[in-house]
Image 1 (tube, rainbow, N blue to C red):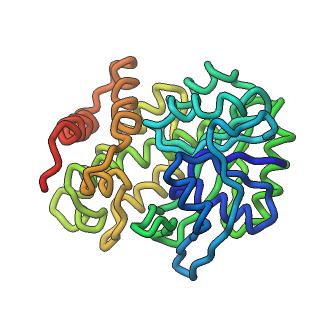
Image 2: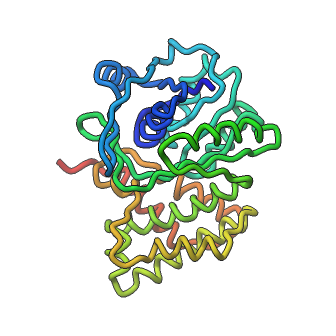
Length: 306
């Protein structure tokens, strides 16, 4: 299976490198600067258990050919449009597997390539690119979930899952992958909304007088929107999510907070804004989510303080 991975950041860099180690046929599509770095120095991954370096094939957009059976989109949600443009020469056949936050990217990809070609995927990992250009895994969490969105994808999705099971990360196969995407979205919206508003970790929020209650309220708002869209979150999943979102002493934060503090572009529109828009369509009240979205919208307009 020939696989093209768009981007070598936290998600693409980590999981692609692990698949490469397992013998998968991996090629990275990169921008010029990242392409030069990995071509000359290789791709280094730092994990809590040690570091390793691979030397994968890397290409630029003008070097692509339509020979890939799978294209993995490991970009940020705000880079989706440019990523679709960059794979133009490679996307005439094969499947597309996006690992983006939120849900609206599926609508965009379905319009561009047809739903039959777009598989569902979820990546759970806290990772970033260090100053040296390596991919740094911040915690032990590293799971890769895939699933078919139509019966015609089942055989390929199972083949990919078999390949993933050979790699050194946690692999999961979900028959109802779209429900799993909503499960993650409502969790992530609460995590990002609360940690950015409070500019603190889950543990710091939980240690305050009202932090846990506010986390539960924002999560309830998110769950109501999911139910309105036809993807009700099960009680078991809700309890599991809330256990993480209200855990005392937890250092857990959202990548959106890290991006905010570093004055980097972030996914507030795709994680918070799109959810609020769907609430409006169903006349669902979500005051805390609106505060979180408005806060990030204002912050995104402010100049960085030097």
